[in-house]
Length: 368
Image (tube, rainbow, N blue to C red):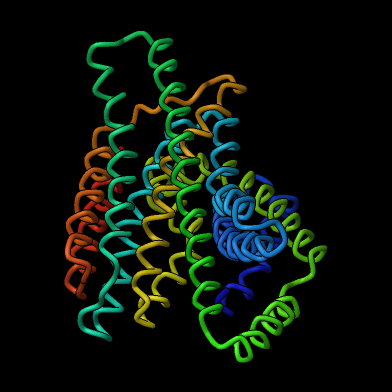
């Protein structure tokens, strides 16, 4: 977790204080403070869920990481559903997918390519990410195409629920595949260690568990931090959602722009900085996994889960997105697939992704 995020943690307390003291007079200040406070809170949630994997294993750890790693998007989405801001929920989903692929990956490849020239990664792994992203975009595009023949809202909602269930199953299979690869990798490492001289290998195998156990955080402290960060995220997300309408009226921005640009950037700021720093260290394989994995999680886990959760609210959520959102998500998936074909990238590839993101933001800003 970058050190500068720790200094922003104070805003997680400032925003509720402003809400209690200022009320409706300080909507803009409440919006800014609560939005920025979600950055360190999301980083703490991500750090603690990674630590819990040491205790619960890779399968449960993967599920925890998928659930709590997207806690800001989920919690903001739930409060927005409760407030009836369906357009904000859909925009934040689309904005997270677009931002991770275009802005995060683009900045990472630009920074890494500027330092190292050409960078290399596994095109096989990137190809798997491409297939998942194209599947996710197709699952949003096909219901939209169906609206030309289906006009009854009840049938559209039924389609969205069925597609959401299919996406959750696909995500579970995707997650299980990565767990299988992790186990296979660990098993391969153990076999290679056994092939060495027993006298040299035995002390290493005996010392490693003890050393990792000393480095592992305390379980009660990890759980306590996770609970506090989740509660803080919920509180500040409620304040953020409550300030959206007054802020849009005061600044003249649209709710779509806030959902597509502002909320995704803030909610994923910790991952953004990590991906750029990792690319700067010439570990672009991990950068690709972070950027693509975040988009895949939002499209195949967060979005369908919010559809099912919305059934408990007055206005249910469907998977019918605006044409402009679908077009940009489709272009982002295509560009990612083209970049990952040969297993290498340069700063120009990153600049092209960022350029498309800036063009999209310009259009989003002028949407009424």
